[in-house]
Every structure is written in structure tokens, then in C-alpha cells.
Amino acid sequence: MRVEVLANDDALSRRATEVVANLVRRRPAAVLGLPTGGTPVGFYRELVRSGVSFRQVWTFNLDEYVGLGRSHPQSYYAYMKRHLYDHVDLDPGRTHIPDGMALDWEAECRRYEALIRKAGGLDLVVLGLGHNGHIGFNEPGTPWNSRTRRVRLAEQTRQANARFFGSADLVPAEAITMGIGTILEARRILLLASGPAKASTVRRVLEGPPDTSVPATALQTHSDVTVLLDRPAAALLQMSDGRAST
Ligand code: F6R
Image (cartoon, rainbow, N blue to C red; front, side, top):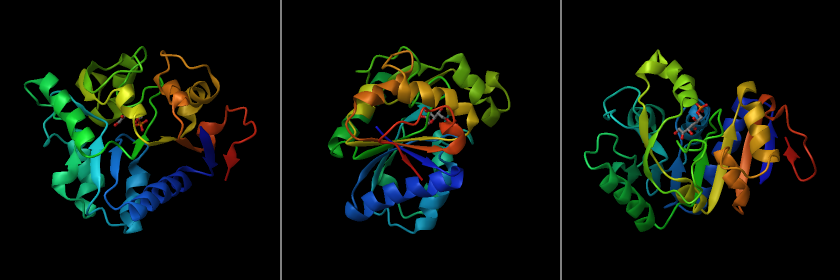
């Protein structure tokens, strides 16, 4: 894994934008996996500012809460509309988010996997990092060959996301998420983590042994992963050779 430590969250957002914008300029019909949450807000802001055209780009979000419709302000559809869809020239027919209101969720998960395959697979998936090491909503203990499916959120995840809902009780208990196996099939992976609260998790992900109790350690098995950290998130790393610091 290549690790880049950026001065602050703004620099991290600009660097992530550079990676994605360069890919889209090179490959206008790129297939992107996209995260939500607090970390990528600055990244979407910079991506919009970059002026790059998304006209032919395909997007697949990592996850969606079960039971939240598109019009719910905390649905990940509403998030993507707020931070990206409303501000760039993406074709709505090429943007995808699992349907949290699907009646037949197994069929929905199969459909999602099939759509990713039909688009040619993910060229680049951008990930945030949960405090418990989750990627997407693949919580500790998730097998690394897991595919898109319905999952129960860890209590720690509901606590962490309480800030968006006002209270942890209001955070949906379940979600549909791409699996770790789905994520690992992406040709390239960009992991973003910022802030001091992520520092101990970052250390376990980058310097600990591969371990299913820290889902993001699965990324150690992928051949093309770039990790972008701000200084507070990198503060507990040993920083050995081969790590770029900017
Ligand atoms: C969201 C997602 C999650 C978040 C993670 C970090 O689509 O897949 O894995 O990336 O929970 O969230 P923040 O950035 O809010 O700390």
C-alpha cells in the first residue's frame, strides 16, 4: 500500500480529487465506487470545483441504509445528490446506489453486483474508514470473499453516525453494502482517513497483521492501494521507508 500524508483535510481532498480527475480525463467512461460520510465531503467539493466532465462516468456507491427512501435527508442517495449529483454533469442513468427500500433485498444485491460487472468492473473505488476498521458497511468479522448483501450495523457504527441523525437510536440498524470481495475486485483502491479519531485504526490497518476483526486490513492483499491521510490520522504510524510524506 502506498501511503501519502497530507498537511490537512483540505490537502487530502485536493489530492483525492487529483487522483480521480486524472483517471476520468484518461478514461472518460471510468467506473467509480464512491463513499459517503464525513470524510469525503471536502473531496466532493473539490471534485465539483475541478470542472472535470463526468458525462460518461459510471458510479456505484458502496452502501445505503435499509429502510431509508431516496427522499430521506440522511439517505445516501440524498447525500450524493447534495454533494455531487446536483453539481456535475453525471448522467443519472449511470449513477447507482443500492435501493434501501427494496422488497426483495437478495434480488437487489444480485442486481447491484450484475450492474457492476456489466459496466466492466470498478476501475477505482474510493473508501472511507470506520472507527472499527470497516470499509463500506463491512463490519468486523466480515469474510473477505463477501459480496453485496444486507448487513446489521455494529453498535459503534450507529454511535459514530448518530451525529447525522441526532441520536444513535435513529440510525437505521441495517444497510446494503458492497462486500469486501466486491471491493477487492476493483482495479485500484483509494482509502481516505482524516482526523485524530482515526489514528489508532489507521495504525492497525497499515501496520497490524491482516485480520478479519479489522476489515480494512483486507486491503493489504490488493496490489494497487493508495492511502491518503491527513497528519492527525497518520500521527500514530511508525512511518518506515517507502511512505511518501507531502
Ligand atoms: C460510507 C461508508 C463508510 C464510511 C465510514 C467512515 O459510504 O461506506 O465505510 O466511509 O463509516 O465514515 P466517516 O467518513 O463519516 O468517518
